[in-house]
Image (cartoon, rainbow, N blue to C red; front, side, top):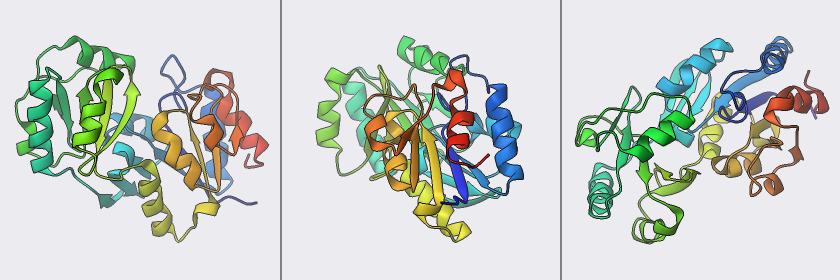
Length: 258
């Protein structure tokens, strides 16, 4: 089949374990674009964290915040901020449990606790600077995603209490993404496809994390990286090589796209 658009996750997919774009990946994306295939990013990252990667690869269409903020050809086409009432209730519950939070707008992010080791650890794992503290930032700006810092053994009560208000996705041992209800990269990809007049079967997606499950199942060709989480691989149509072993280049070649 002739696919018309390819979506790439960033961390563990476009970026290798050294958090750099491998030269083979750079060449593969450029060749894909030269072949007339649309190229987009689909990530849990905020716009201000994903744009350096997008600009380096000449990409102007992206799904950010796991689907809550979608840009096509440089123009915002979908946004789904979190409810301020929900954020207030969630922060109060997290505070009572001693769990810090980070709140992300389209432009920046702030923590509600200064220099918490779990916040520092999670941001350093992405090679990003940890946010400074600014209380109740969610009252000042539209918040598209939040981070809730708790261990897996502590997450169940949040899932039960807020199951109708938000979606939770774990991306690190100490932190959960907090998204709008039913939020996922698949919903963001749906908006991009509608913008271009395409169907899910026209699309390919590459990913490796738990927040890529819906995306890989939604598109016509879901490709799991060789380094993908073991819960992700069964949902993919194909498993390519490890990100450090030219996984994107190999997968695109197998699909006949480059």
